[in-house]
Amino acid sequence: MPQSAHSRSWIIALSLLVALMLTAMPLPEWAVNWRPAWVAMVLIYWCMALPDRVGIGISWTLGLLLDVQQGTVLGQNALGLAVIAFITLKSHQRLRVFPLVQQAFLVCGYILLFQIIVLWIKSMLGIPPMHWSYWMPAFSSMLLWPWIFIILRDVRRKFKVQ
Image 1 (cartoon, rainbow, N blue to C red):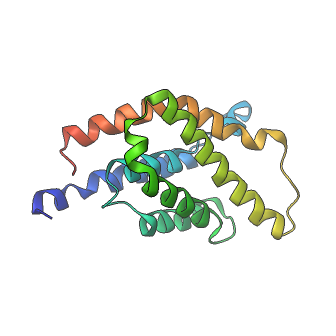
Image 2 (image 1 turned 135 degrees about the vertical axis):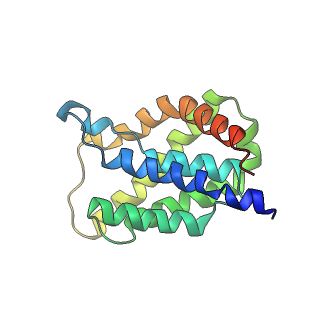
C-alpha cells in the first residue's frame, strides 16, 4: 500500500469518531427514540467502499467503544457491528451497484439485524423487551442513508482515500 493511502487513514478514523460523537449527542425527549444508528451507517459505508481497509476487527473495536460509551454489556454492540460488517463485506460488490434507495432499504435491514442481536443479548440477561419505538432507529437511518452515502463518498473522493 502506498504511503499516501496510509497517511489518509485518518479520514476513516475521523468519520468513525464523528459517528461516535453523534451517537453521544443529547437529543430532545421527543427525538431520542428516532436517533439514527450513526456508527452502524458509517461502518457500512466504509466496509462497502473500502472492504480491504475496514473490516470485522475495526467493527469489533468500534462496537467495544460504543459499549463503553453507552454503558452496556461489553461485547453487545461489538457482536452486532461485527455481524453487520461481515454481511457488508460479503455483499459489498452487489451493494455498490444498487441505487441509493435500494441501499437504504438494505441498510434498514442491516440495522434491524443489529437491533435484533442487541435485543437477543438483553433478553438473555433478563432485561425486559423494549417498547415498539425500539425499532425506530432503523427507519430513521434508512431515511438518512442517501445523505450519509453522498457525504462520505464526496469526502473519500476529495481526500483520495483508497
